Image (spheres, rainbow, N blue to C red):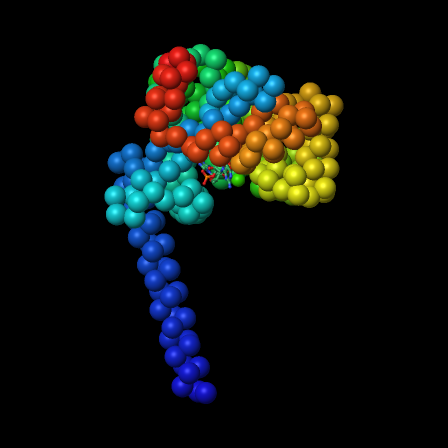
Length: 275
Ligand code: C2E
Ligand code: CA
Ligand code: CA
Ligand code: CA
């Protein structure tokens, strides 16, 4: 019994070591990946539910690792946050996305994700405005998505950053609504232009009466606050139909298509005469 116990610990140690090794490799790799443009923007279609027309895209980061293949942002964004690289990573993604989308149809908007960590940077708004100016992408076509987590860490700073962006015509969305801590208080803290309902509620809407009730309540809340609501994670026509009936303004998800590379997005827009 004693022997097998020791083996078990030896085994445990090795897997922990491997995990640490991977994490170290990724962390070191990330330092070069940003300047080497291995971190690239993908584009997820956002659809206007009433007209079924393409409204714009959400920009999602992908790491095209030369050895490991495509790495999910769920893996590398937390590393970028913990190592202080998230600011540079985010500006690099924006630079690439704005340069690509500058020439697309002016009706098309872009939504970018901002990490709560970036809201600690007093110069964040100025940095984003500079990238907009350098790439020639109109601020009025940009929406910034902020998640609820740790928004209140430095509320005064977050308010000033958001104020500077809104002065330029940038819109602000509250992302992952319903999953965070004290959602309703967040809605009052910042001048949001849109609510995004988290996909965990959306995906179970036709199976769970509770999920349907929650999505319906959020849609009504958006109506009374005059905030359009976007639902994410739509995978079936039935869910899209249900959301339209409930009165969500916009929708995105695999039903409309997986996130596209710059090249694939251009191809789609060319087909639809939106280039
Ligand atoms: P998010 O902002 O909530 O983005 C939605 C996620 O849901 C994306 O995952 C998207 O690919 C995925 N998704 C879209 N439609 C469907 C669907 O129909 N079914 C399912 N199952 N999933 C769907 P992704 O691209 O892996 O991104 C994960 C998260 O990483 C994002 O969640 C966002 O929080 C973060 N992220 C991505 N890019 C960036 C970035 O440039 N900066 C920051 N700070 N965070 C980013
Ligand atoms: Ca988002
Ligand atoms: Ca989300
Ligand atoms: Ca999320």
